Image 1 (spheres, rainbow, N blue to C red):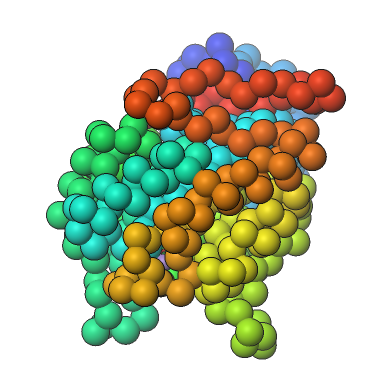
Image 2 (image 1 turned 30 degrees about the vertical axis):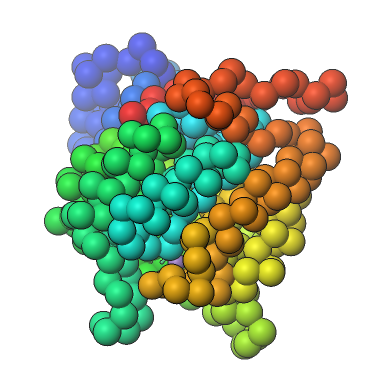
Length: 370
Ligand code: PEP
Ligand code: MN
């Protein structure tokens, strides 16, 4: 069972609920979000009547949930969560393009890529400083120096930065430099790491493990939510199948599936999903058509010499063409792309124009960004 307290609930109201449940022999897990407190009840909840709990002061709703994920479930929150990353909203009406190098290799290629991302219409910059490489002999990333380069690129372009964190002890330093923390596919079930990013307040992008079912992915998200961080963006990045034409099989059906099961936003990574540059644009367009809230792509000034993932990285001059294609798809489904920053200006423009047939956005997660 999940108990959602209303926005006027006091600490005393929360204590009354948790005290009564504990006396009934049930476990309680209290998540304090930016606006409200959510109490997860663990144990045999058949003896608890939701109607009685809802009569307690400060209680908005009590819901019995059988799925192993509760806070992530649509049953707890019917309106979509909008994750705010320094003013870039993921999960709202606008589709967000995130672009940048697979790995931060040095300052100059990162700045060049960040500038191209910005002028090409990206709303955020990606780049790996800590790299989860399959081989220990491959480039492992610049670590702290990479984080400093990313922060410099953000300072110059005003693009919020998302970067991967691989270990619980790195969370503090990565959160100090980045605006959104990426949990990579290989770490989707690193539960200590999930707990640690759940304890801090920067938004988290949780990639789907390459061998994870949707349920396992949502349970991983539940860890972050249960530890108090409600700002989670899911990212579909391809799963392992028998197919060898592509690096992974990009599971686009996961987008509408996840949208039905959870209120969390979902974005798609067509670069890792396919491994092939020429497949990135068609799969990105298909992802937006399927309802993805954003696309994350890799780009490099000279993909042939990239230290990681060159074959799937767009050339810098391809970013704007991708943005243009995505805007057509977004418009066709009553959405729009997050507006590109005007050249020479570091201030973010106002929201995109509303198409006539636009459905009024209902999203309001109450979460606040950076
Ligand atoms: C990446 O984004 O560069 C990356 C390593 O992604 P994934 O965890 O999806 O493989
Ligand atoms: Mn990569």
